Length: 349
Image (cartoon, rainbow, N blue to C red; front, side, top):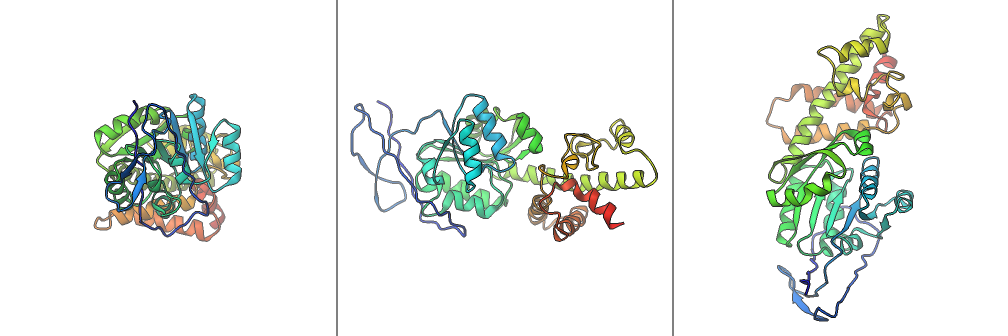
């Protein structure tokens, strides 16, 4: 008979709280013993053992610009997906694409043994996993695979990984690079931190949404790689925006300048894919009034995380770049793609 699984519970509280009540599902089989009571490891109360969650169901929490596209790719690969988000509209769209909907992270965890999260910040991630009433930890199955694709504080992620391990499950930090286009096309790069066996278990799932899935080391190393990438990217976009500001101000056609840059040593992702000048690339957020893409306030968040992680290092250009993104946010550009630095520079003149 199939081995029974034990739900886990946590007494930890988070600074955020979701206003949904957890719903637990108990399934039974004639081949299993009914009403089996077991002592959960590390807890004082007796818990009712749950049977295995459907192994084929993937849980996905966080359906924003990135998460909605990532979940859609799982559905395109004919995977059963259960979703949760605080946005009713996002849940409705996912349901129309074929996903089932959970009322809370706790309910989702009771229906899925593989759970992915894609959330805006550290407090959101802590709440989703560790909230006493609605969190994943409170109702997940033993041996669950937890994959957090959010870009958050490294110490927060490592702490959650330790808690997951203590509860008999496996945690992988797996932040992504590639933007909304990569999420849409299923070509994201996943930078993973965790045990080798956890990575090997997660890789087939992540490959459904990405073109490259790489293990960077133990828990936290995926986030370290992502923060290093975004530190470089934030600086890079400012350089490209200033280069176009110079060239266009001197009468150079921006499309011609882009072709030259991309055939020369300055060519990069910020010029080839996410060009900050409206009209140069039709697929760039700049050509859609900087809608979609990677919000300036999120780049500011990531630079803050990077500088905090490297607080003992001389990250001079990173600190200067952060000042630019602080200016963008304070001038009302925070929700727009970070290529809006070009518009900011031209208007500032």
